[in-house]
Amino acid sequence: MLSYNFEYYKPKSIKEAIEQYQTSKSQDKKPLYYGGGTEILTLGRLNYIYTDAIIDLKGIPECKEFGFQNNELVIGSTLSLSVFEENKVFPLLTNTSKEVADYSSRNSITIGGNICGQIFYREAVLPFLLSDSTVIIAGPSGIKKFLINEIFNKELRLDEGEFLVQIGTEKEYLKAPYLSVKKRKQWDTGYPLLTVAALKKDGIIRFAFSGVCPYPFRSIPMEKILNDKKLSYKDRVLASFEYLPTPILNDIEGSDGYRLFVLENTLSNILSYLGGEELE
Image (cartoon, rainbow, N blue to C red; front, side, top):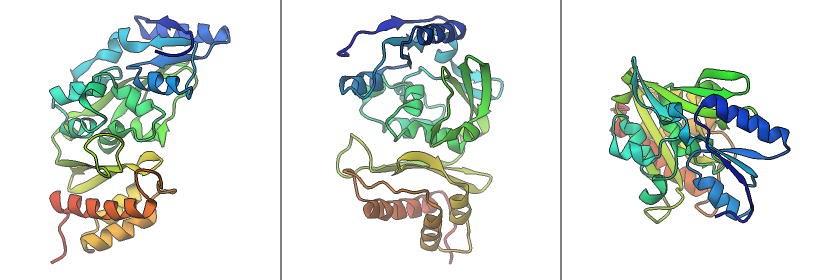
């Protein structure tokens, strides 16, 4: 439990959630949208997060959807990560999300909570960055649809009072060749050293990263170099490092130099696995 008092609301519609947020703000409260609540509870106990009004999104039907609409897989933001372990319709998402925390925690951590959270790893966003997914955002100015690569820059760029409703991914990406690799310093659970997700589309391997920098990212310039078949794997990887964002993380999980060493080997293995066509 949290050490401070707060009001709790569980709206049954998007409209009701937004109205409750605005009402709380007008009363000089600090409202927070709540999906699984794992991060709010964890950081709240440490006094890193404070709220006096929690708005639980799990009662909103659109936030709980999971299935196909036309040619698109629709995923509601309040679905727990464990859902994707049980239903493997999007294998890259399954393999990336099942490495987040432990199984009991994944029963509570939601896809929206992972993507929008303050803990910078946010690994669950990587498959969506690679598959040109779309997001539905709701807020005081209405309900809007964006390409995730347009609105995600280090984090999902939400305006005041907005929340993530759904993520949509076209069917063609769900069965594309893929690989998701998570490296830890020593344990099977806990925070990772780094995560790399890759997906092959139209002969081109796409890459997205978590734990390399203090935010997840996909880099088109890196992909261009990594897919240059005139170069050896090693030369591709080393040349791609020139396009890494900065800073490279240097923390208790591993130094910046060690991260780059692990990343070099990981990228070479992914190129080999997905058919990067090493020079003869």
